[in-house]
Image (cartoon, rainbow, N blue to C red):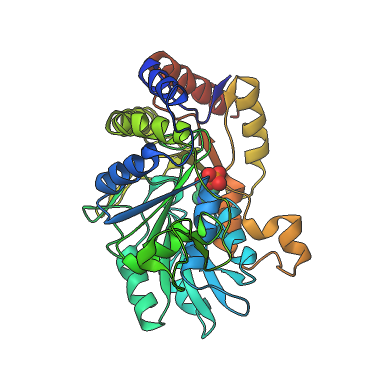
Length: 381
Ligand SMILES: *Cc1c(COP(=O)(O)O)cnc(C)c1O
């Protein structure tokens, strides 16, 4: 089976991890700060805070932004559930705005859904394709809300030449290091920001809301052991074992992105002009690091996807569908979301299949995928 995505771990990565296992620190040691520093530098942000996974990153980002009950966030339904769940964790309500043809949250749809209750906008750079951040920033400024970019698909992507994660148009950006993402730490997440106040809050929230930095104490310390819990935080720490893997993976990011783009180019050339499906090309403001390679069936009836999916799986292609609209899930239905609220996303869902894309794919595997897909579609007619 050729999966839709997969990690790439080599001997250098393994050697680094072994070094940490033999060292004095296996959690919250020197590797955490080193990873944060190198990551911030790589994406062009002032600060980075590492946490245990991307979902935890979204959660603490919402908390640092001050999200509470009675407030709303606006996000896309074309994403992993975590982009909306983070609002529910804070007692706030996710509001879904519909998507455009690239699968990205549509600024005009946000304007229709924004209200006095809206506190945060959480756009998702679906598949690695950057959202229209300039327009989103305008809307956020006008409506006095913050932007947290869910950049879990977009490490290495650029919008109008600026790196995703640099937070040029947002308050925070959130990344995941799950094995299918651009770099992995097994599980892991990161928040980047240029705002010192948010940075300080994020660091405290990740470790129980406890700080031991004297300059930030609320009360006078009564001894050198003194530390204080200032807010209700969590244990969302990453281990040094993982952080060292992250540092080692970061060195390969440039090659990973190059290979992903090379493979997408091969697909684009191979499938150009076919009558069954489209790929999603970049527009002139976008540079995608391609977390996924979605194909969109031209067939609008919605009858074809199931059949094609089945045949691809039988051919050994570990394809997947990204995504079931978040509010389709039984939990969201149970808390009152109705189908039909984002028709574009629902149509997109009916027509989407993510075909295999990961840096370790060989040219032969890419050719195999192309040949299988050509054969499956040609047998349809
Ligand atoms: C992977 C992902 C997350 C969650 O990250 P985890 O590290 O798996 O918790 C959130 N949002 C999007 C869009 C993702 O793809």
